[in-house]
Image 1 (cartoon, rainbow, N blue to C red):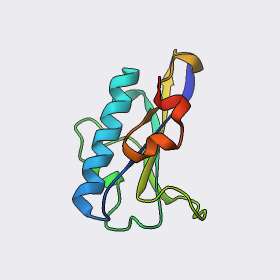
Image 2: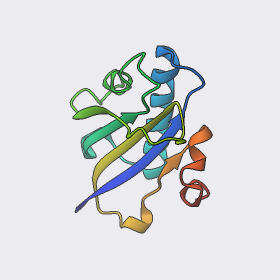
Image 3: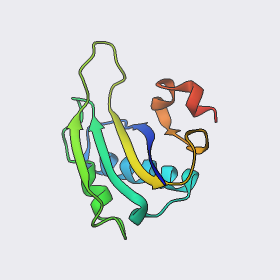
Image 4: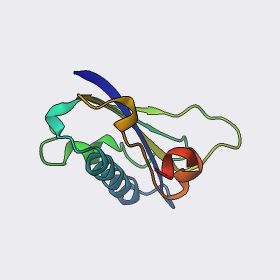
Length: 122
């Protein structure tokens, strides 16, 4: 069994708590559905946000999901590169799995599809 990284990102329209929390749940649920794993398979989830999102911690949404209470979570700020995508939440889900790298499905939603169109199209 290997530990694989699953990447995902989503954008929100505004720096509002509800939008950030809802988008985080949508993104994580899409990652789970695309890759078919369970919370107990997860080593950890690293969450980053762009500097313009400071209304709440996105990890709060994950912590409230059934079965995710014990999964280690960490929030951080994305590097503030000029001209980069705004109002973006990114997840790096580290999962223990027998899947190969090629079998992993990364998920990019909303405006975040521009980050990796090559992965968004899969």
